Amino acid sequence: MLTVTNVIKIFNSGTVNEKKALNGVKLHLKAGDFVTVIGSNGAGKSTLMNVISGVFPIEQGKIIIDGLDVTCHPEYHRGKIIGRVFQDPMMGTAAGMTIEENLVLALRRGQKRSITKAIKTKDRELFREKLKLLGLNLEHNLQQKVGLLSGGQRQALTLLMATLTKPKLLLLDEHIAALDPKTAHQVMELTKQIIKSNQITTLMITHDLHQALAVGNRTIMMHEGEIVYELKGDERKKASVSTLLSLFEKARGREFSNDRMMLI
Image (cartoon, rainbow, N blue to C red; front, side, top):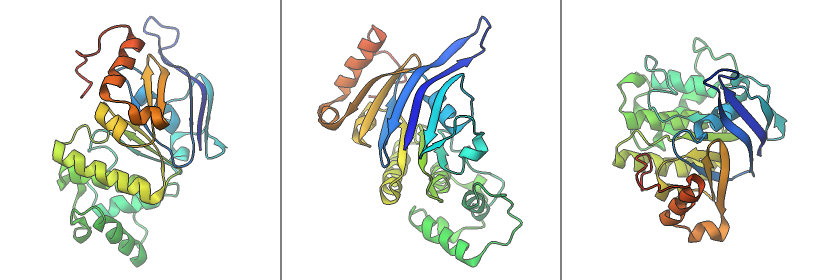
């Protein structure tokens, strides 16, 4: 479903600040895979998502999604088949627009996304139906400005928007990291529900090592722009946070316990 082959991404090429953010990355996801991605800051996790979604061009390699070579396709073109949720609840939605208007934009992804076109009754009914699944009573407040929602409500709405048209691939970039623990749990449960019911192939970055092993069916570890380890099947089921920390130590060649970004 997703095949990333020998992808290289270099920032500030030819300068003293040159950095190879991705170094020959190879990754394959089958349809329905839910893969968690871990690694320290600067490992290349978000850069990987950015090159898959088309935010950054690549220097070398190939990216294929559902049989389509999108390597040279711009971000807006890939947006037809990719859904994405960022860490910041403020991203992914338009604060000055209503809930309904935001959902219209999501529904018309890949089309001319004007909201001046009349909203069909069936679309409004779809919005209410989907919003009801969130359990946040937003289905009764379609005309509410998104900027007035709480962080958790807004992130749940962003998740719904990203999956409204059932994308081929869903990218979750630490999408619950900025939420309080209770809200983060609620949004994560909603995430698992939506992914399972729609059978969406998913790539999710997390700094929570417990979560990295608890959700999905595979875990990959990145270090210095490369995928250095992968856990799946029985090996993953038997793995613990201690297992991951041991692998991190091997990858980095030093103790990992003081890394403040690793939430154990």
